[in-house]
Length: 193
Length: 193
Length: 239
Image (cartoon, rainbow over all chains, first blue to last red):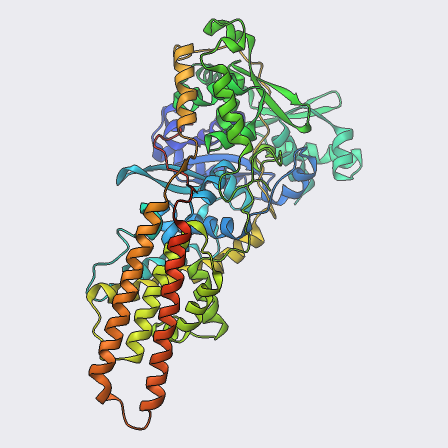
């Protein structure tokens, strides 16, 4: 049995995201080997009923987006697709700029994002992870569910993903006259409240 | 999308045997068409991690038999892995507040509890019961095994049982600013995925 | 769905500002910001009561616009490095926000259209597998932690009042600087448009005064009020 077939079996059985590190450990292989097997698996699944989703350090199998409407009619429970303006803005920021801190989200939106972030966390559309540069704060990033709802298998399949990230980075690094670039420590008024 | 890809999507999603008759009805195709699509799917799955199981009039996707040993090891690990802080937290909410919906658990925790609940279910620590108020969703409650393991015969023997329940119930029924209370609409996005 | 925001049409300060700029089909720069400053000040005046958490944000954007406008009326007005920074920062935020709003249209179109479904939970017969961490003591401690981390009602009025008061000082100070600057640079104005320019500045100062009154009423509304806020809690859920 090839490594990609074994990975497929495990992902099928687990039915939830698994990290590359974990897969490497399970099969006693290097992470590199797992990654190239994943690329093969991804190709094999092309134009099939199942697709491989990759995000951060994790992978998962899900039904192909093209079959979405079909599965939706079979699923008993009702889906909520309404996001609202605040939810939509915040998700867009997390998608295009994530992982990102709440301070930075507030900074871009100009309003406090506490409640909307909690809402999105509860809905499982964003997740928070520890901020590697500051243990006391968190960074927010997209979940597999979020990618699934948008029907993409990798974050860089988002329209204009690379160019937008580049563009925003340029805004952030343009030095303000007489000041250090603000990108490092974006401050927001309500932060301290 | 080809018929075999659609069938694959449905079988992958369900992971339970489905009759050919049912598949024909789902796709609005003849049984003959479904059967020949199944033959194509079977070929495509050859030497892969997942294989098609056909028995009498039913079909299902299963992990390939060669992966059997591997899956068994993983299944054992599922049962022994560390529950972690999030697992213990979720378990304690089910214990004190059960029967409780996943939506309410998520709302109280402020994050999505999908995968944690799955693990608690597999480990026989919590069980799902039908929600009398909403047929499409479930409620979670502690198992008898759990209660006897921690050494209580009646749930209200738990420390501060009444006051904890009261506090959670109050939280679930009072809106946080900018949010509607949880009890108003018993649906959740990821609940149904 | 669930958790719907109660005021779905609520607009933040950047939203308001961006709309004003786009309504006039302008690019984002200090010239366009100076043009819409009066509109913005007039707008926040009509809000009467600022949305609870964001009053300081509204007023802070207002004060930056006041700076931009003052500078455009009185080119001789000296700005501090910090003030220049505030102006550049506002332009930058508007540009990023505009981009995000454009992108969110695409996200909205895609969201829920073609969903990749997570497989249903595999049917496995549960095997009772507790671990050592499951004791009455640890479970009751865990539930206490949950309760402790619930979003709390906190009395935060004082902080907001202080912020708004310091902004009031700032506008007072700015008004004084603009007034002084007019006196000093009066000779700079050419004879021909002196009257109209003075008229513009006077009405601008009147506008500032109105905003200041608005701020004072905002700070008074806050007094002694309960404000519900979520506190971010520590502890990362492990899955």
